[in-house]
Image 1 (tube, one colour):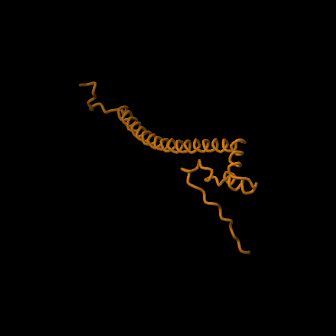
Image 2: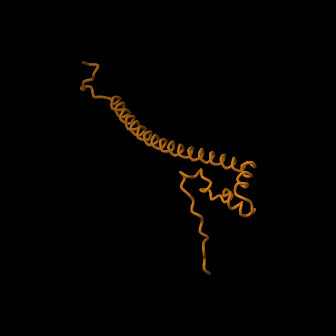
Image 3: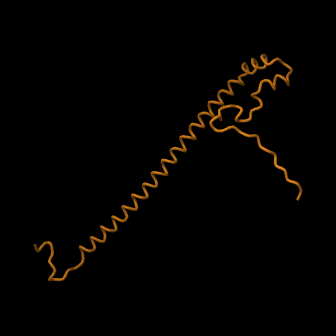
Length: 124
């Protein structure tokens, strides 16, 4: 086996900043790189990006990412609530099971045949 080297992945920004194009490691978002490659002034490239709808697409993507992040947080909260309710439901079912067993035992005790000399509640 030879030397195994792994390509280091770029460091991503935290989820709180996920709406930023930098968090997705967007190189296309950097107009200065594009201006340099095209040999045009930065203002011209900015204007062209706005006219072609690229910046609008970036804004839409940012909004979608914000919505996704919000929904993921809400999903996490609801899952936590669900787990708490399931735990509570299990406890209630356990208590109900023991209560039903006690009632069954009491019914069985009341059904036992008694000796003639025993006093029954009806005889009082």
